[in-house]
Amino acid sequence: MTSKGIVWITGCRGFLGGEMVDRFEKAGYNVVGTDVELSITEGDRLRAFAEEVQPSIVVNCAGIRREATTLGTRVKAYETNAIGAQNVALAANTVGALIVQASSDDVFPAKLGEPVNEFDSPDPDSPYGKSKRAGEMMVRNTTNKHLIVRSSWLYHATSGRMHAVLKAAREGRTIEARIDQFAAPTSVALYANLILSAIEKGSTGTVHFVTRGSTSRYGFAAKLLELTGYDPEKVLIPAEDELTAENVVLESMMLDIVGETLPTWEEDLEAYLREQGLLAQ
Image (cartoon, rainbow, N blue to C red; front, side):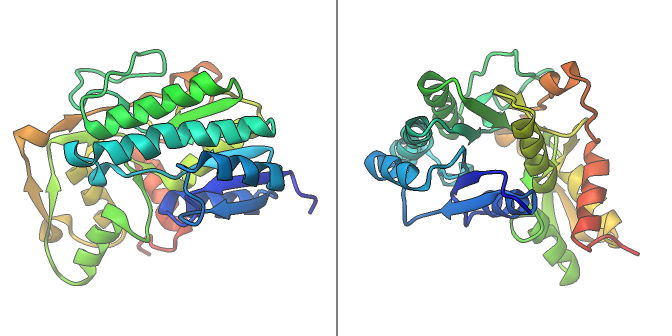
């Protein structure tokens, strides 16, 4: 199969970067991945690497994660999530490549009264959200050849919340699940496939790649357990905390406008579990 071009993926050993490497390779791209050995905070080295590799697409999956970002660590978060994103965009610009910047629903406030789409103005209220919003702005101001992708509750089978819930069920343990945090859960498979489709259609700008509908973390975990053959009531303990309650539901208005039909979160979850061989027989 003839290569479709060279794709450079930063943060390639993270769960999202790893998924991107796998999906792009299967789609026929020649993938080059970098991680901690080439920090996105090192602008000169990034530009030199871009000139050496000559990618046509750069996917930036590197960054400081939400759970690692607090008021005490916000300097590092801005250095990586904002200045780092700008460095990657500048490197992409050096060789005329498209930059795909992974962003988050955290660029919006944690408690919203209604769903938000790409035409709504971000207004983050957390250190992490503010650093991701700054990263979006840095990329947007650096190059027109950008695709900024926001999503929410990206899940995968090898680690994270999905893994923790299934591990508890297999071991006969209980685990808490929040009944007061709501979003649109989206599998890494759907997210990666939507990015591939957008690139091949020549899309640019800011997009929301999420499933249709929304649920609580408890609702998601309950459906996960049901589909994998466990009794949610024997595994899940409902939990809530007014201080950290969330309701951030993204809508994919841009995909709606072009007539793209997205699955519901339940359909996406079932399809992902089937792909991973985890669906109950």
